[in-house]
Length: 328
Ligand SMILES: NC(=O)c1ccc[n+]([C@@H]2O[C@H](COP(=O)([O-])OP(=O)(O)OC[C@H]3O[C@@H](n4cnc5c(N)ncnc54)[C@H](O)[C@@H]3O)[C@@H](O)[C@H]2O)c1
Image 1 (cartoon, rainbow, N blue to C red):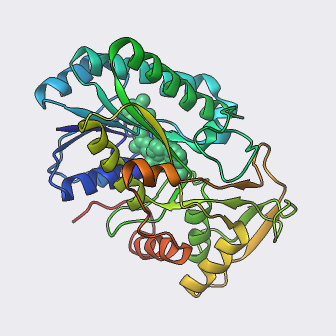
Image 2: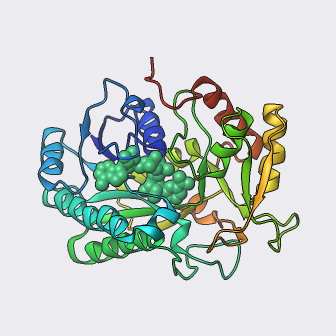
């Protein structure tokens, strides 16, 4: 049985869905701070609680013979982490340590961990490979880097085996599950909310970057491809693989204006934009070197092109215009 923390959230929900499609049994632990109860199918064992609740984690590992944990649960807004660092360090690090301890004390030593390209900070060279220096520019990025370092020490001392997957920008949807956050800070959900008329215009933060059209370039990776990589990382650990850190991205970048243009094509809507000042700490270009994911996990994105990513989210969002409804 696999424990999926944060499985009522976006990427955790899609990964739990794919695990079940592949015949795995999953248990979900989520405090619903940012997730949706309706995103968890009724037949999946669900515990509403904190990852930092050691007694609850002990009980789950015993009741369900947990063999491995895919650990998604975290607070994940960069801006919020700058305003409320204590909350981020308590939630992501302090509770994260409690989770690791409770898992290891109960014999669970395999962890696939949601890390992020935010652990690299301002890129010194692009594409960014795993050996790029890690110098986060915000408390969110630090909270994830601390967890990587803690797991490294736990590996040396206690034999914990982990794969830290450093995602670039997660996006897209499956038939039933998509990205719905309130407030929403990510570009693709917001461009499609503008297409649905739910917001009057899409805010474009900065159009004077040293990029061909002046807007920032990011690497977008479909949530189903992320889910697939987690399952591959689990198989890697089950086969006795050593702890590792692996980027998950498409390896090519798209500018904000390319996303807007493609969204206009996919939706047939005119999508208004509003140019706003650049956000502090937003690099001009952030693109993954994803070669290691291919080499170590045999991973290759199945939906690498932007139009396919946008189409999947658009189809889901039209069916779920005001967020989450229970999967019927
Ligand atoms: N979305 C991205 O582009 C992206 C990029 C890089 C890394 N990540 C990481 O991937 C993971 C999942 O991201 P997401 O976009 O699905 O976010 P999400 O907010 O949709 O999911 C996270 C889930 O964790 C739960 N949670 C948070 N703190 C908890 C706690 N202390 N105890 C129990 N549950 C808790 C929330 O309720 C939520 O359901 C996060 O760790 C995030 O940092 C996301």
